[in-house]
Amino acid sequence: MKLPSTVLLCPLFIVILISCQQEQGNLTSVSQEDVYVFGVWKAPTAKSAKEVMANVSARIHAHSEKKSALLATQSEETQQQIDINQKDSKFKPVTGLEKVYQTLPYSTTAAPETLLPEDEEATDWVRVSKPSTYNSETLYKDRFVPSDIYPKIYHNYGFQKQAEVEYQSPKFGSVPYILLEIFDMGTPENAFGIFSVNSYPHPKFEWIGCKAIISGKNLWFWKGKYFIQIEGYEIATGIRNGMIALARVTAKKIQDPPQKIPLLELLPTPYIRGSEKLFYANWALREIYKSAPNIIPQLTDKTIGVLAQYYNTNAKQEQTPYVVFVIRYPNVSDAQSAYKMYRNALTKNNVSYELEATKGAILINELIIEQ
Image (cartoon, rainbow, N blue to C red; front, side, top):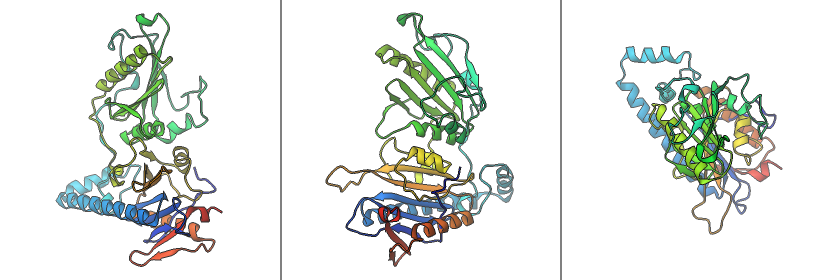
């Protein structure tokens, strides 16, 4: 979805935004290299913004060299087959480091309802009824959901099918106390993406799947192409233990190893644990990062982005975290065009900026731009 307040991006320069160096905590920095547009929002100082940009740039170059070395070892026949396979991919074939880009592999393709734990696979917990299944037309049409972004947010992340069932335990009588939902999201990237929507800084983790988050009455994790959501209807130790037991049984049924999203490797480390997000659309970006500037890079149906939050380690007092983002475009031309439009939008009102001599960077303050 295109938002009226969003715009695209510009040339092969780094854009860092500053107006008044005495004001700190609202500096934006943006750059474009290869198929990537990357940057930082709300950087505390110009120095920290430049350090972030140099870090991401170095990671892109290292990633590029690694991919190029892999390409050099491939036979012409193998490369031709890769090109053929990518014709139907969401990301069309491009040159350079993205030539061999593929989504993460997965081995488990079972229907979600077959992955739901059977009676007493988790000690003492049995199904209340037969599982229910939902598709893109019926998901959450039969119940109240606490936010108007559902089920739209699931569809944005590639939702395919959902299955759910309630569980009860003799220890707690005949009342259902746990709801377990399994979402087939189509790819591991999509599964992580919807998981990241639910994530937040410094969560409590359990080593289930690719790490599960436990918060209040809820437990979430992803594994392979599946996102799993478990709700306990009451807060009690026995119910929470039952949620964890059911999660472990479900994770075991999904025969994929824990995975990491490759695009996250381009972000500086360490970031705030649990703050990493994956997004496809501008409206989704604004949902997961409410403090995003009014002017942001324009995403298309062929882009994928990640972001994470960071603390200023040199700060003497607590402050709002800053955010680093990386957006991948389908080819270099699209990235250059998007960056150019973004830079033009940031500077259209003759906002003064400082040009960095070595890399052509400009520095601006977000508060000045949004006045």
